[in-house]
Amino acid sequence: MPPAIPAAADPPRPRFFVGVLAFCGVVVAVMQTLVVPLLPHVPALTGSTPAAASWLVTVTLLTGAVFTPVLGRAGDMYGKRRLLLVSLGVLTAGSVMCASSSHIGVLIAGRALQGAALAVIPLGISVMRDELPPAKVLSSVALMSSTLGIGAAVGLPVAALVVEHFDWHSMFWASAALGVLDIALVLWCVPESPLRSRGRFDAVGALGLSAGLVAVLLAITQGADWGWTSPRTLALLGAAVVIWPLWGAYELRTRSPLVDLRVSARPAVLLTNVAALLIGFAFYANSLVTAQMVQEPKATGYGLGASIVVSGLCLLPGGLAMVALSPVSARISAKYGPKAALALAAAVMTVGYGVRFFTSHSLPLIIAGATVVACGTAIAYSALPALVMRAVPVSETGAANGLNTLMRSVGQACCSAVVAAVLANVTFEAGGHTAPTLHAYLLVFLIAAGAALSALVATLFLPGRATPAPGTVGADRAEGATGRTTAEESA
Image 1 (tube, helix red, strand yellow):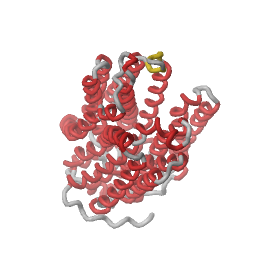
Image 2: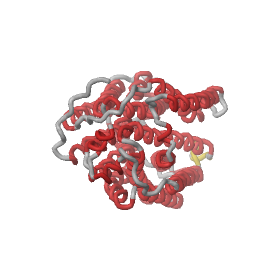
Image 3: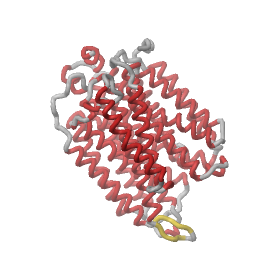
Image 4: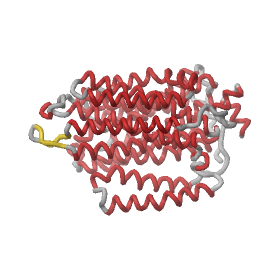
């Protein structure tokens, strides 16, 4: 085991310490959606094809899905601050690559590195659990988890402004500068946790998980372009069918698994991850559909002909609402339990899509519906890590939160494929070009509402307020100890 990085001085104020980690989370989340407004222009700017340009989003999804649980587990074993700095360094390197080139291959490689930095969010949650007193954990973790949605909501309008008014490379130079700033802030005020899980890093398990995820996510994200019955799609799905059982059997036999499947199979963990997948699906539909819907030309009969910037700004109120609601969610979780908070969130998201279904012709009402869905997402994203931390030992916090974040990403990938399929197949001719019908968008709202409602059902089947297992956050509170003390005793 490598020597631990010397711990930084304890943060002078928990609020500032939490703010630094949350800022890191927002920067990383912004990177996930940064290129979306740029995609239609990428082929002309780089001399590539639309299919190649789509990889700027696909590769980020793939690397984020693969590296989030892997780096989370590595953080548990080798130091969370250490891996947090590695993730931010990878983000910065990827940003510099994208900023300094217009070659599509270099851009895809840079975006791959940016996607790998998604591990910052579960690592930040784990640092908070280790370093903060129990009274501060829920509210701080709620804010850190919500940065996934906040960054997505803020990133779209900011990127749209850059695309319209500046050279597109400038947004990558800006992201590189923010990455350097994040590294400096973490070095200055984030301490390294002394907690370590024992054993060797499960390299075979990491390779198996990576292969299985790449096979499934490639098939999901590229199936519409390749054809769902094409040899490539079927080969990937067939590979996944072979890989996953073999990987699971290996993980059950090894002494230090990358993912503890026995812990993951507990109802408290399994149902939380199922809910995370469904919430990720429902959240992403809101982001994907809103911007595209308001940009549809007025000739469609429902489109508003809005600009890229206006369409991005439609999501900004939702992002601000997510910032405001993260402490509210923490108070709900503290008073009624995170299960109640997640159930409320799923219900709010379902209602939000009901609003969207009946108010698709007015810009203010579209924004209102999107904001209601964002409010539910904020509460859900705040409650999910609290549920995970109540159910897993302190030594597995990074890996468990990484897996939960992964499930949200898988939900987003599935949503992207479903939305693309619906909008591409339910179309009509309007103003001389093919466009999705209004019924296509309404169908997406119904599907997303169904996902949110399914998340509510999964949440209701979660175990109630059982006595927390030793070494979990709930046990820490019951003993009146900090997360650090309890973990040290259990080690």
